Image 1 (cartoon, rainbow, N blue to C red):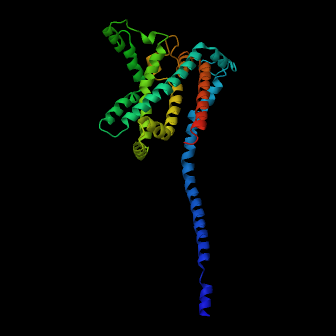
Image 2: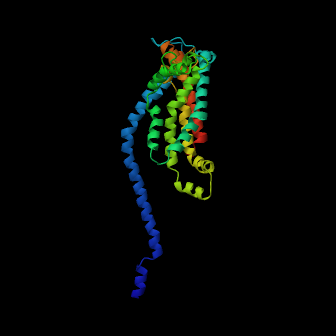
Image 3: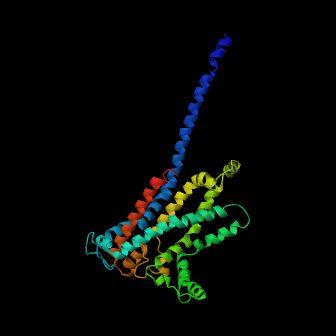
Length: 321
């Protein structure tokens, strides 16, 4: 009888196993609620100031630019001369704007076709942990460290046809000195050379970081199988580096659309608007010529282009990254 009572009073293993998870689930649910309760003070403390700053310095200026683009306004007084979409119509008919749009497309093309392959090639050369590679990384990265204005001034002196490095080399060789920045047909190519020189170091460092994250045992296995360097690059490096490459392309495209600081001291958008980009065109017509309504229309178009490209690219190419 005592044995029977003991058997009845003793909880079965199945029942014990059934009750334990319920207690764990209850604890987990309680901990989840406690975590949410701990997050709320942080949200209340930090979210409103961030939203206020974002609204004041991003949302409101964007809305004001869209509003001002509907007026023929010089920036003085309140905008009163409502012209609707006339600024956008004038913008599309402006030959200098079409040149600026073409130059931005050319900068993007050169960045993708020349700058990024150069950066990837140099990254594969200096990514190995051998003596001396750190110095090469520093040398290649130094142009990016320079301020854009300083880089523009340096290259303006280099291209100078009277006292610059190009003039010295031309006199040394015994040929006529080319005035590259004063030539409407060749000035944009001089700007493209500076763009490649200035920004390839940034992309090179991105690629180096991506290359160092690849498991070295994959290359060792490929060596055992007798793979050539090109086969290892095509089957190991490129597939595993593709997220970094997509990120680098994204930075290159958006940065090319926003290029401004380097062009102003280098060419100022000249000669004859041949080196204008959309941002320098906005500055020239919207700020220096005090056509604020027209400049706001340029800003709206540039904003729409950047947002469309950024969200489309991220949705199509970076949705899994």
